[in-house]
Image 1 (tube, helix red, strand yellow):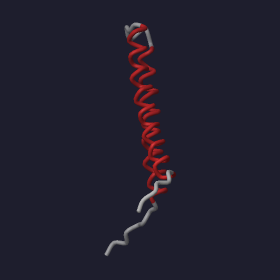
Image 2: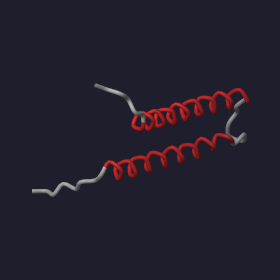
Image 3: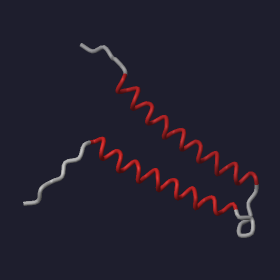
Image 4: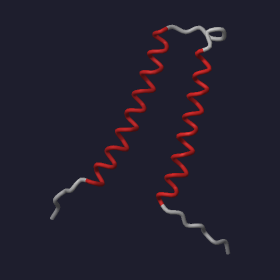
Length: 79
């Protein structure tokens, strides 16, 4: 019988979140390669549109984490 390794929610979060954040950082590095005007043609409007989308998604994600933290801390009266 295999022994099941038990990891805490904290350990699982650290592992998964670290991997996912690094993946996003790597993808942003990849996106920055598109800034090379010798290889790509883009306008200021294109750049603004890209970064608006990225900022909105980042803000949504940050809000999601904040709402979960606030929910855990909030005190609610119940009978």
